[in-house]
Image (cartoon, rainbow, N blue to C red; front, side):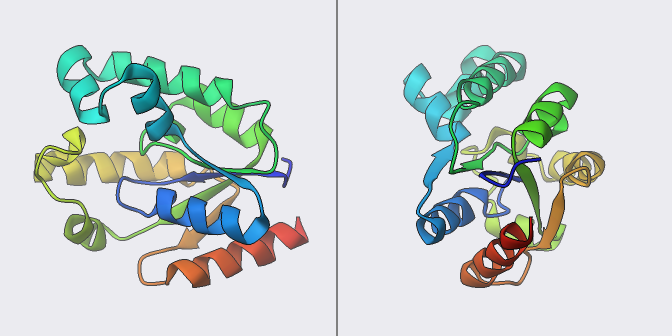
Length: 167
């Protein structure tokens, strides 16, 4: 593990993009959002990609973007909610940098993530909860778990800076 790059992992709505931007600002690093890169390259939203091409197509685009960022250093990468679940992606991430799981309880996620179709995998709440439970064992393989359910973004950033200084 190298501490000159951080990958934020966790379920949708856990705050990966927000924390990535705040942590990158604090460290003077670049913030990278995998979903935003995919949307830019594909010229459509994640929801539209899911609807038009399906999840396998999206996961392939996600892996391509992840791999395209390997040369970047001094970066905080916000991954998609499913990125770290894939064993190949997880191995790449854990080798390339520090993986940080932003762990948020399901009730907080349900409150944060609307079931309005903007996030394709959140529309069905029963499936949303099943997916949450199914992904937790993969997230637990991150280098560090942060309880991000009630902590402020600033508090999370300070925890991460402290941890990075020790590693």
